[in-house]
Length: 286
Image (cartoon, rainbow, N blue to C red; front, side):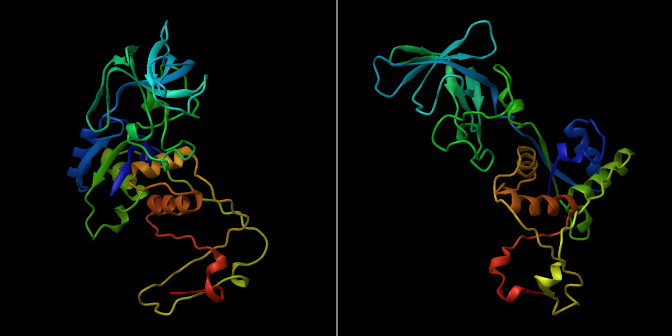
């Protein structure tokens, strides 16, 4: 079971180093296998703003960019990307920077022209289109985030959570959720547990008129609940939700799938979304 420390802080106000947190939780009975700091393999990569783009005289595919990195003077970076325009905000790996997989970036020359770093794609930052659906797979990651030149890239894109991995035994199913682990953390550190009450605003009509749920084996399933949501637009989830799912080890898909996974992770209650059009006879048999 992975736990996002950012998500945990919504329920328990703790500010502690991950190593100390892991040791205390293990001693109190919730065994921690390890922890990972997101973006720890990325260093000296900042937000850059493209100021100008000119063709490389000795290449038919390279261009020379002047990039504002929040310093007094812009830097020059040569790239082969074709998806850039002046004004774009992009990840700029500076001289002596590191990227996931142990990749090190140093300044050098490309076809005789000095390049003081590298402009990065999603993949080079260890990310995918599931993390940032508006990006393109083949090309430089052009940011749509609210960020400024010179800002560390991990801060700009929210790649700065701490993921703690717990070994949960089968006799503690209550800990297979963020709230369950938050309850353990509150007890461990003698902190108040802050819970919120979901509010469901029902519309017109009755779910029972549109869908029938029948439990055929109550000894194996005592309760199965269903609700119908209408006028749905399937689209990417907001960034904050994608970040939390990623930290919990779940790949973001779209808003409908992500909402069910989010609630499952928060409460430990399994959920699934069905398309009502494809439920045969409008009946769910358990």
